[in-house]
Image (tube, rainbow over all chains, first blue to last red):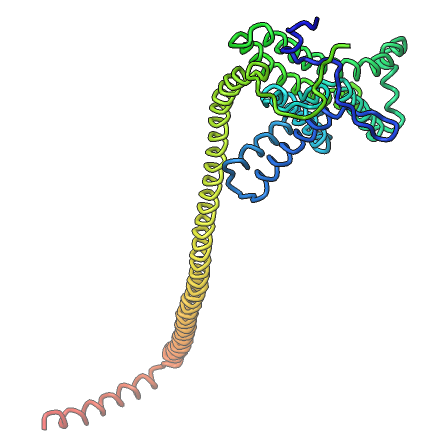
Length: 239
Length: 174
């Protein structure tokens, strides 16, 4: 007999809507929600920045404020000299993760049914977060090598040579920690909310949902800040 | 295998499953809370930018005015400097003229003085010459009188004067 709870609780962990692309299978639901996030961001920037005026008001004010915030974040983490060219990257990380987390928490995705699995935040899939983390890894390597050339690799033996194994290990743990921190936070919140909804459908899940909204915003900030910090670490001068 | 999944697309109308009520409440809270704060922040930012622009405008206008003032002052000062220079030139030439005329006066008076002194000394010299000549004559006369005067000459002279007196007397009476 099928547990009647399973008919109500549609938290399908591990259930994906598979698309075939050649020999690869893709998680279709993640791609769909990612496209929704991209559409939201494009719409926001086009609407806000199409008619630029010297005195900002309305949406232009909002987009300018966001830009200033990200610039400030990049400047704090990377330092005054090189921060300008990393603002787009850090801004993209921050905005993508922020909008995807909040879209998963606030948009009524459960209304739409798909053949297998369910629509939710794209960052609840480990593939998304690992992709973002690997991009961050590549970017801080690129930052260090483009600024210092092969002298970048001196940081593995500074301040002392016996720290070499730890420094090498750091290069592996950084992307792992970034990806799993984000993935764990988002998926766990979705699971908790889903379980609570299946137990007590009204009112009680609300505090957890609010907490989820808050922590997902914080996670976006944390990811962007850490990416900035790693880049800053790679380009800083020895002291 | 548990038959999860629906096999196709569709709309879920079960309001409990879709969590819509809770979601509506959460969205309401988030929008009102975040929306209010965000609006306040953005309004502040807009006002700050506007006031900064206004201030910058104001400063530009003031700077322009100050530049104008400074320019007019410069013109006035130039004029005054020119006037002072001209005045100085004219005063200098006046001074020169005065000094020159004074010099001439003094030269004239010195010339007069010179002439007078020369005349004075000339006259003195003349006087001395006269005195010398007269004294020489007198001494020669005295000498002649004292030396050449014997009794014969004395009688002749006395007779001359007596005859003169005699001739004279009747003329004055008539």
